[in-house]
Amino acid sequence: MTVFRAFSNQEVLDYLATQVTDGQVFTDEETLKKYSFSPRLTDDDSGLALAYVEAHTTKDIQGTLKTARKYHIAVIPQDQTTSTVIGADGLTGSLILSTAKMNRIIEISKADSVAVVEPGVINGDLDKEARKQGMFYAPDPGSKPISGIGGNVATNAGGMSTVKYGATKDNVLGVKVVLADGREVKLGGRTLKQAFGYDLTQLMIGSEGTLGIITEVIVKLLPIPLGTPVMGVAFFDNMTALAKAVTAIRISGVYPTMLEALDGNTVAALDRYEKTHYAKNSAAMLIFKLDNGGQDSMAVVKQLLAEQHANDVTITTEPKEQAALEQLRRDMLPAVFAGQNHIMEDMAVPLSQLAPLMDYIQDLSKRLDVDIYTAGHAGDGNVHPTLVWPTSATEVPEKIIIALQEMFKKTLALGGTISGEHAVGMLKNQWNNVELGEDVDMLQHQIKALFDPMNILNPKRKIN
Image (cartoon, rainbow, N blue to C red; front, side, top):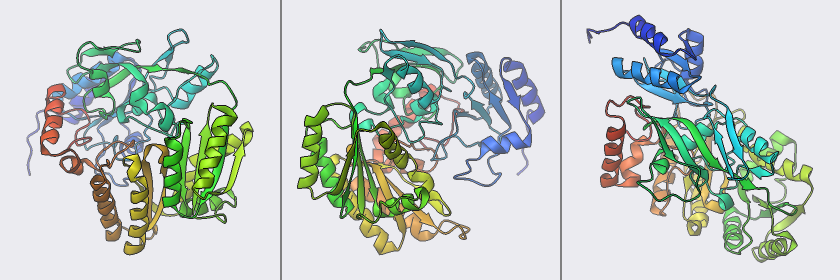
């Protein structure tokens, strides 16, 4: 189809260069390909961006959005590019707007128990700096060493300690956001309570860059708990037995910091990756942690594990051994992904439905002859099944797609969600009206239209 364009690409780029005065604008093919496509998810040039903007200041963000409005161009916000749901890949002719270089820790206030940071600050770096003052930042996604606070906020990232300390939404007090029309607004603040106006702070958390661009975040910090942390591992005959043990511990009053589940396939993959020998013990592994509570709490955990027929229970207070166990859990993904195509999913169910979902995934794997490695944050009902297939396949096998559809339907039937902490992106936006219902789906679109009437902010993500 012939299109009579009003402006050339060069005219757009020339104008953009006048608007981004503190940062940099890249248009070379190498940079555009590097940031337009997630190496985990896409491998073609169908979404090559027009420019990659490395913002250094709020002014750069406003200038990029001004350009986008003038020429009706999509803007794709990026932070540290760790999305697993095609949430920040380029669209053809779009402007990729990166806040990765906006990475200052502006303030750590022990007195107020808050930190004020720019969006590009790495989660793990913030935690390390807070610990120097006797505080810590609780949210700990698997990408903690590499993901930015801005991306964590945009996706409402969770992690291993969510069972005790909540997800990102439970640890953010306020944000500054540049709206699609260029205004920078301050939402929330540094008070632990706030009941004035509609809660627009929480609206921005998990919005995936579709309502505004985050420029500053105020997060809660917590004092490092007193006492000696205790970690351990326990093994079970199957994931269903493990899920029942998790429920018992979760409601016992000991307030665990970590309850991580790995099925036999995943443990075997870790053994190959780490040169360990855990898989010989049984078909499911639980990694648990208490960061305070002492021996009384650990005695309760031991008793519950015995009642739930756990075997080979090992407990340690040694920091190096605990660090090794935490690293074991973090190495789960590279261990499972090694040498094969994969899709890792992210469902969450009510705690009472964790065991039924585990059963269903195991049965589905056998019925469809699909290799599934299941792990997750069992303490909050968040399950991460990873479906794998040979690298020789040029397309995703039909049985993989069917398995995903069946898992999604079962999760929703159990009262769960098909996105616990990885966001929606473009992978799941076709399921909005299925999970939310048609009326709520319409409300989602109306909110989007109010904040971004020109649909320039991360289109096709979050909602379709």
